[in-house]
Image (cartoon, rainbow, N blue to C red):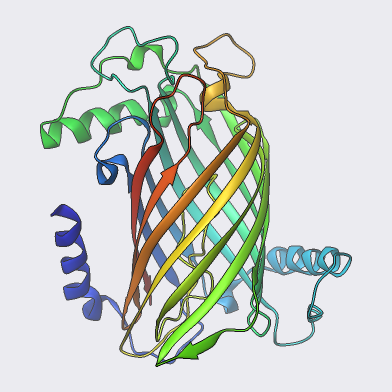
Length: 343
């Protein structure tokens, strides 16, 4: 019911938030929320919150254009069909993104003051992210690089966020945060490419398309490589790569273009990640801390839909993630809701 209320409010207020359509060079503001409440649980990856801003292309700084140029140079060395346009051609668009996010992780039993040593540790991650994207609309390709800098441990304020959230809704107060991971600077560099698969087509007035994605991350937070695929069907959707997700999941994109008065699409997909390091399971890098035996491969399936009202996009994604550590019971299930506004 809470999800239905949030969607209803967003639809009601979307026209007031949006501006006149037709200006494709607008700013984009995204508010994103993921929580295992949507999966009827309260454990493991329990909550993520993110605010992101994409400035107008006219406001993209020179250093971002320089990075995009190097991304094009690298892409030219890789197998790619059709050939990627050169930077001088208008088909290439450089975009930059800024984000602030927080993620929270807990064991299954949050009522225990002394958490189970074989269950996932308490941990929080607060970070800012800077991303540069080289978008090729004509061939349906997006190359991205993102640097996240933040902190793991008490300075993430995950304890305070979860405690206040639970008290506000009358839920169980988490008691084991004294055992959370120790303070540590947190760095993550991610590189990824998304490609349209085949040619979009239309049947009976419905649009169909598919995208693949390959991504990798390195840092003291995660070391991983991943790949996935998403398929979509809808009408008048103006979202080239799907809705955003919290890291390290294979993510869509904050960017979308103006469309008609309304539009929608449904989507489904799957991804798999090979993980060499996960600080939230392996524990602190330089100090002894709670930890568990990490699974080397994790898969996800996702389904959802997105609604476009004027210059506002409102997607919901439901995710099922396989076991991440030895001894974990059932796979995890959670949902993600976001609102993106062009202005």
